[in-house]
Length: 205
Image (cartoon, rainbow, N blue to C red; front, side, top):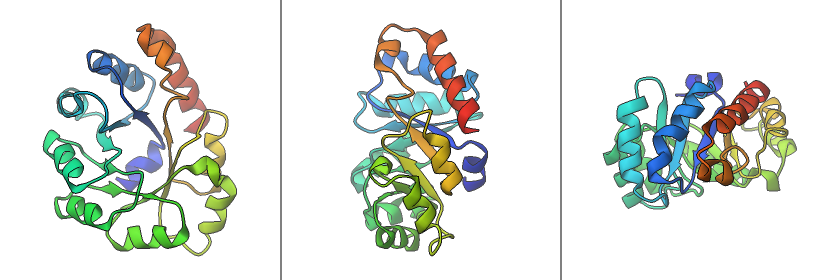
């Protein structure tokens, strides 16, 4: 999965998307050159969305689950077919649960110590969250002593600053509301969503 992230560093975070629009949203992202999405667990009917998305897009995209806050969340996501797991916090038991089932896990961290704990527990990468509170300089600095730990950044990422995190050493960026505009989705304006996603891809890839 790390090689996949290197080639596809833009990870849209689908949070509380309407169930009835999930296919259109993911299709628009795929049409724009995006091949990975993270669907957060507080989304209504999330297990159905994950299951349906893996069935429809799983052969050409990676479908993951985010905002995993417990072993139960992790279990539900894996049972639904999630191909990777992302969390906003560090819980070693959740990392170990996912790893034992062959599912890549990216837990949330905020300090170098948490980064090392997560990696030692079996995480394939860590999610620096909220990244905007630390900035690209932190990524560059921490990659000095911890160069072996891949970093994904999420929180406060937009189309204008995403590249700076990648240039600082991050392997991927998570894009939430700055990419998945709620008004655009509510209006079912998939053309605009595609255009926004294409702009991100051009700046990030």
